[in-house]
Image 1 (cartoon, rainbow, N blue to C red):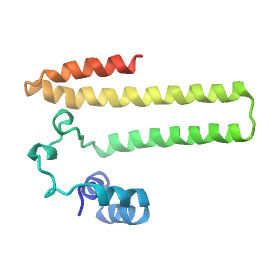
Image 2: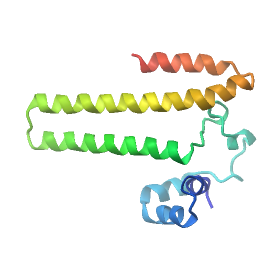
Image 3: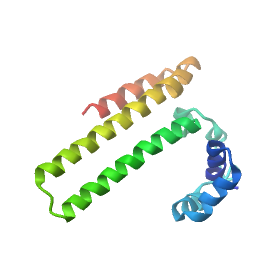
Length: 145
């Protein structure tokens, strides 16, 4: 079983759901095929949950669901704007919808950044890795452009 499938099992708490997701979606299948298994990973730190060590983060099922729901809504909004353009909608109407998408993306970033600070940053600072503060400052600077 691949690491992607194992993560799905943790999130859903249901092995059969994760198996069905992997079998029924080509994206999940592609991720499963390309994701390294734990025996293929040379770096022993790659299995940790601290994002600054191996650049991966295990999220709680609630956090994962919330972020995925936000992205799904944003994806729907983008498809809606594409449809508006295809139907030759008025420019101002499209601009208003694009502004709503930007706002939704900003809200997604705020939620993700807050979760990152509460988990990854706090864990790293407690373990003595103060470099994570510099990374956080750089990240915030990029987000505020």
